[in-house]
Length: 594
Ligand code: ARG
Image 1 (cartoon, rainbow, N blue to C red):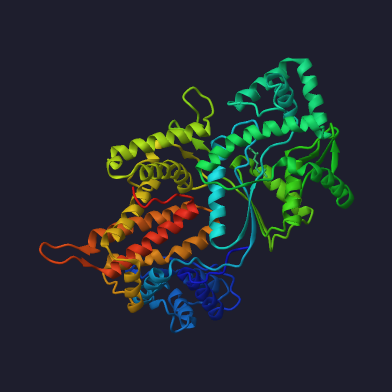
Image 2: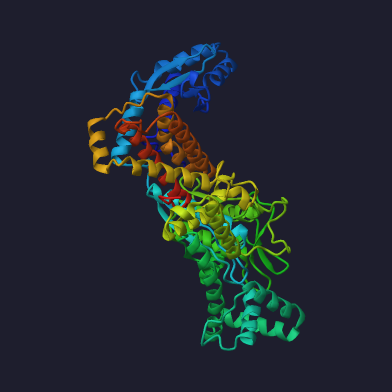
């Protein structure tokens, strides 16, 4: 399933037009379209570079045509009048340069200022995003933080274009480790049935019980008994299990609240019965897929070298089993068009093997449905090693976020903001900076690569950071605020001025970037690479900066009345709205004052 309904996107429309022209000029030629933005404005705004490879293919079949002529033939098949195109020029080497029509840009900006930002219309899809997904009783770590941030942003993007989105927390809340946790809970918090125990450090609790499990035979036996009782749904043991889950989730919820994350628990425990059914289903429908090995029941999906363990030798299930059951449920019951797993890159082999099994079982059709692992790299410390505290412990997420809040407070003080803002404004700005900088640092790095976590870097107000963007946004809003022009005055002006007098090169550059929002949304919708949106909004902010340096929006001259350039005010307004749209998708809280 590719996203191919481009709506109002300029680049998308150009792509369809060129595809059709190439198909018309050279029917049946299987050649990928090469269309890109032009780095040098001398050659227009977009350039099609397909002529050369087409000439090469033709040559191989005995037809000699110069790339320049191929370019001309493609050009001849393009429609005469394209509303957004000023001119099209074919270069001798066959490059086809497209120049955008300035009046089209002027009209579009006017309409965006008047009617607000609209995102491209795409066919509605049902998409499930499996993200965050920490394990109970082992604290959420920075890897889960990445999954949480990236997964949430992907959901926001889908929601923005009107998809039906299922936000799923596939928490690790099931398995034999619960035996020892429950046995330990009975010893340490005998009152747990009466009140939720105050286990401030669940990590330590886990370690304690693990230690006892490894060293104390008696304890180990009790732990096993607890597992058996849990599996047979013994009332009190289930309550103990619930207690441990609740304590763990309470902690996670604080992290989610800070980061404005909405997510629904559909953890491993949800699949208890479904795993039993799954094994039955395989035995009835695909018995040949299972093979016995040392008491285990395993399977090698087509093309896979590493098997999935479906049933352990003691009859229990594994991470593989729960993921198989989850895949079946998501595709056949939830009927997802698109099933996304935001999980660290290290689990790629596991997930790909599960997907291959799903294809073998016929649970989904690759032509109409998309099942994919959205992987990501590690979070590293300044020393380029795995992110740890100074004493070598894993970093607690809440500590990390508190540190962010502390640093953001210092940052705002250092800039003297505490003197000019009310307490509420300051608190809003502080949280926007603290949580926004952590999210943005993650999203702005190429997802598949490792990145270095550095508060110094992410709180820098220059460069591609949330702080820079939050300042840019607040500045633009303040320009509009201090102009004294009301919304209805601006609306009246726009209604009378469908073609804004945007003539300065900096105005036109900014206008073009603003109109690329749809292209950017469609690009990211397909690639799920959020740094592309970060790059987009960062470029937008710098182009705004250039425009603001070169063009007066409000002109104040000694002894003369103040002049407000309405068309530039409209440009400010659209810029702020586009940034705000991107912030929503990236999960950054916007603040009107910084
Ligand atoms: N709980 C797992 C972990 O912490 C991640 C689960 C990801 N989702 C999945 N369907 N396997 O490593």
